[in-house]
Image 1 (spheres, rainbow, N blue to C red):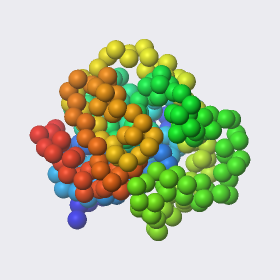
Image 2 (cartoon, rainbow, N blue to C red):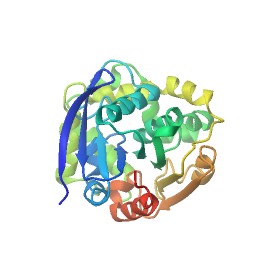
Image 3 (tube, rainbow, N blue to C red):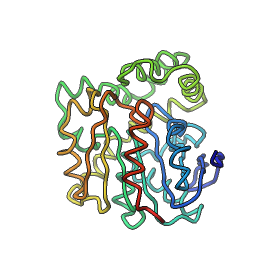
Image 4 (cartoon, rainbow, N blue to C red):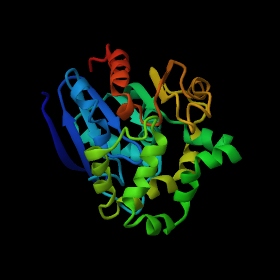
Amino acid sequence: MIAQANHTVQANGIRQNYIDAGAGAPVVLLHGFPETNFAWRHQIPVLGELYRIIAPDLRGYGETDKPASGYDKRTMANDLAALLDTLGIQKVALVGHDRGARVATRFAKDFPDRVERLVVMDNVPTRVVAREINAEIAKAYWFFLFHLVPDLPETLISGKEEPWLRWFFSDWAYDPAAISGEAFDTYVRAFRAPGAVRGAMADYRANAEDVAQDLVDADVKIACPTLALWGADFGAVGKMFDMPKVWGEMADDLRAVPIERCGHLPHEERPEAVNALLLEFLETWNG
């Protein structure tokens, strides 16, 4: 068993919670919505045998602070940069899922000298969603629009965190029961914490600022080798977008791999397949 511990540090003006596990070249794991760093429970024991794993709760999620502002992806990328500075880590391999992939993409563009390689999981870049949106995409991405409404989501979700989360985890997974039992209960507890729903909504409410940031450097390709993974059976990503083409816009050195019999949460639904792909992609990363 690898050594694994939770830590908190003050970095970029907020208290950040993160898991630190294993030893070796650093690999950072950034979770998505509606998750916390608990999402990586299947990856940390495996990757931690070879690498030092840093898995933070993003701003607004889990045990990290949930301030009123700062949810644009440049600020959240700066959160990560400050965390790594505090830990004395200069360069990493970076893995992001969903919202975490948006932070990871912004980090890779803003700090290209700090990313050795990048993995993005089941994510269509923010500016691509905005550019391509039509009635069909808007229906699939209804929660993007709902979460933009000030205050109302928090009001409707309060006290109903369990059915709210159950909808996402059931609808987004190839196997609707893939995340259940204690794992599901762990997420329910996280989103019942004060400010947790508001923090997640604020992440989405930064959408316009995120698109504006992305448009400024839209023609700048990600500098490092990039692996794009997605669930082949998720209607809002792999079935709706040509993912090799989408990520071909973002990175020249790209490998694009669909995960079969999988929805939006490959790391939780098909951990063995994801772990094998990650270990292969990271094989020559030695820090």
